[in-house]
Image 1 (cartoon, rainbow, N blue to C red):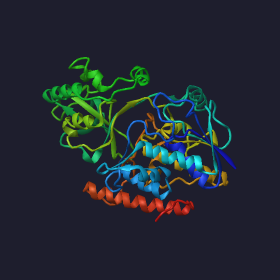
Image 2: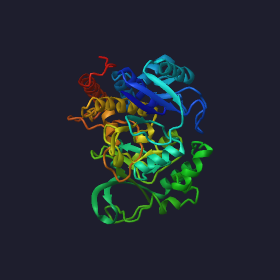
Image 3: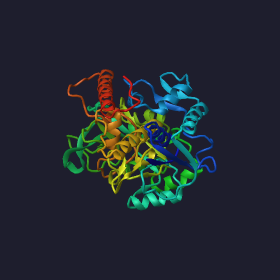
Image 4: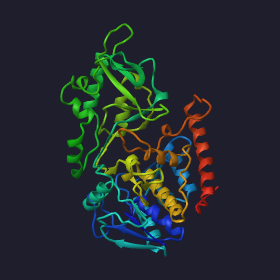
Length: 437
């Protein structure tokens, strides 16, 4: 059996290696080294473009660390390469980029079941394939994917930060819709004049991410960052994302400015900052947005991002096993599916490959339990939503524990131990060769 993998980034490399290790003949297509996208410079595969950090390493303190632990259970090539190329970085898993890419490239090039073809693929193949071409998919293939997905292809990623509900100060915020409609659709976070003025001053002066030339047009034509809106005048946010209209206190008095938080998941454990698409650096988002009284001690489950990121409206096009609804022999993986980050992209590559193996065997693919980060990301890309946006690993995606644990550190440790137990059982049930106790 021969299968195609299109793209040799993190997701494609993981998928190709997993399938090859399972005994399938893999044709791995990539435009390197003959061509490069605007973001790539290295001739080797699995290039880390934006950063050399794979984020936190401790599975008991952050969800990305937990995801990496789950990936090790599943036999991840990315995690193997990361250990080989690791450099000191405190609690983070950082790597020497060249050693990391070199390790993966050598593994792929030397594998007897992998044939590497330098070629631009312009149409989605109709045989067993994993499409993992990333956020800078070439124009011809993007057009074909758009056609297959009903035109629902996004060309930039502009998403607002998400905070944990449990970290909000409810003495400084309240539930309710505008004009006294009640309900719990929104959490309202008011500011008085002095608080608002201080917030706007810091927002305008905060440090921003430098966009690359090929990103600027797409992003700013489609969305206005909150900090850019603030530059238009001191009162501009009060007539936009911080408008207080229709919201009053118990005495019937209006507020000067109000940030609304909207429920991000069915469990109500995560809320996004409505209208707060931003290009601020992550530490600046934490510093400035925490000036809003209700968010003083907020835990940010995901920071806002704005960058060139071709992704599909996955819930309308993909199943939870990353297969195409219109053709279950075709799988997608990587950032194109709506997972955000190096590690998440790599994980989706393993999952797509696991499910393809089941599909080839004539079995119904089995998605990891929702209690695992792998399972939660699978649910994210497939569950219906009115505003699908890319998501990285965070504990807010996981279903709550049956018992209430107030201490965050203890709660996260319990979530992590549950997830690791469940992913090990899943690996056993799938007879995954990379399984490690």
